[in-house]
Image 1 (spheres, helix red, strand yellow):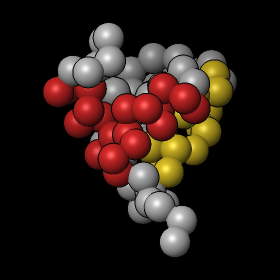
Image 2: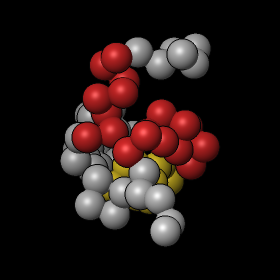
Image 3: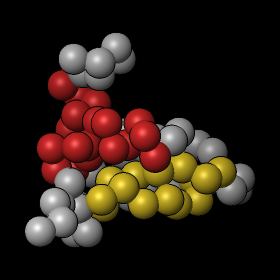
Length: 71
């Protein structure tokens, strides 16, 4: 298991995108369960949920087993 990856953080992949309640616009990544891939979104800077990653790579690493495969 990767450092910092816990059972709770793996559950993050199934949570809906949540931009939070503040007024900043910070580029973050979330896992879209319908598309089966990580997508960028604008995070407000506070609140939100754990489906919120600093980089595409973090999102892909944590949510890899849920990603759709190109067939």
